[in-house]
Image 1 (cartoon, rainbow over the protein chains, first blue to last red):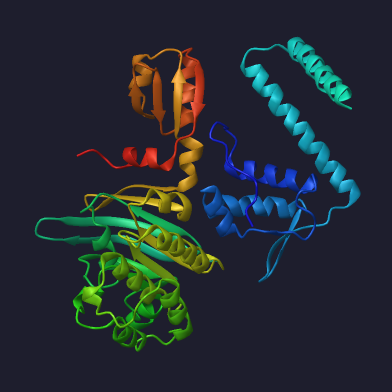
Image 2 (image 1 turned 135 degrees about the vertical axis):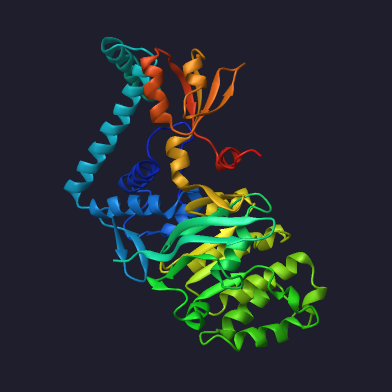
Amino acid sequence: MQLPIKVSEDSREPIYHQIETQIKTLIISGQLPPDTPLPSIRVLSHDLACSVITTRRAYQDLENKGLIKTVQGKGTFVKKLEGKDKDNEKLKIAMYTFEKAIQQTQQIGCTEEEIIEIFDKVFKQHFDQKGEME
Amino acid sequence: MNTSLLSVEGLSKDFKYFTFGTVDFHVEIGTVVALIGENGSGKSTLFRLLLNILHADEGKITFFGEDRQVDDAQFKQSVGYAGNLLDAFPYISIKELSHMISYWYDNWNEDRYRYFCERYAIDERMKFGRCSTGIKKKVEFILSICHNPKLLILDEPSSGVDIKSQRKMKEDIIEFMEDGTRSTIIATHSVDEITHLSDILIVLHDGKIVNSMNKDDIYENWARVWVSDLKESIINHTNTVDVMYDSKQIITNHLPNLEQMLTTENITITHTQSLKIGEVIDYLIPQN
């Protein structure tokens, strides 16, 4: 199966980390339910044009975090996450997403106060729009 | 645990008009090594030396931790090679060729052979010499892989092969590599094969290895960088590979080093972009 993930051309984040975060997001969001088979390390390396050394590292990290499991001779599968672990990982991804946004806004020269102001604005805009749609 | 499948140390051979070596490299278990280099850079010579078709003047080749010379027959059982060896038999049909070759292999899998002939639509009655370039390549590939080797050595396997069959070959190499206990060395001019199949790149130039790296090092270190100012110190920096003056653009082979220098020079980077392998290859091969 082909996973909807890709390696970014503009990101400075190491490839293994990009793979890890994207697979984690797919698992936590439920797009990859428990027991879904994942592509083999070799096939994923082909799809993402990276080396098996990198893909193996991403899978190992995900396995250590209890998100996937490897069954000898059968392949790699999504693990069933317990409620507490799931909330924990969800929080981590959410924090990471905001962290990245802050870094990017800092790069274009925004100060802390400006970022908070912008956040408030975007936050209101986003949820007001949603309210109107409902 | 020993993770080296093949290890080459101090390999060299003198020819009348060409000197090969000295060459040193390792192939780890479970990896695909892409051998890159211009025509005449020594790729096929390296393969012939590995296979003992040519005898090296100097050097040591170790296979699974053992000297390759100790048991030549055992080594050959464990290696599959596709690279213009069959041209010596133009009057023999493909079927006869397969009998001739399978005879020597303890592990020959006739079912695999049948499967591949069907998959690549090979007409076994054809005399090898009458086959087109592409079909010859397919036959060589098939005959290199049916004895379940540990090391697959492919010399430009897809050159002249139709697009559909190139995709199949790529799938078959991926399947061959799947369980992680084997390795492949592939000499190739196909950017697609380098990008999607290989893990390690080795660049050969004038009989010597001039570059050797994990493919993902290119992503991590190489970059196209747009800067606010082009000073002498950037242009002459060891990690600056190319400069585009009109757009204030630099190609670097080590972004972290370059960044450090730029900070001390008070120059800002306005944008960075990773490079595609196809773009980097030109820089990896020295200009004559």
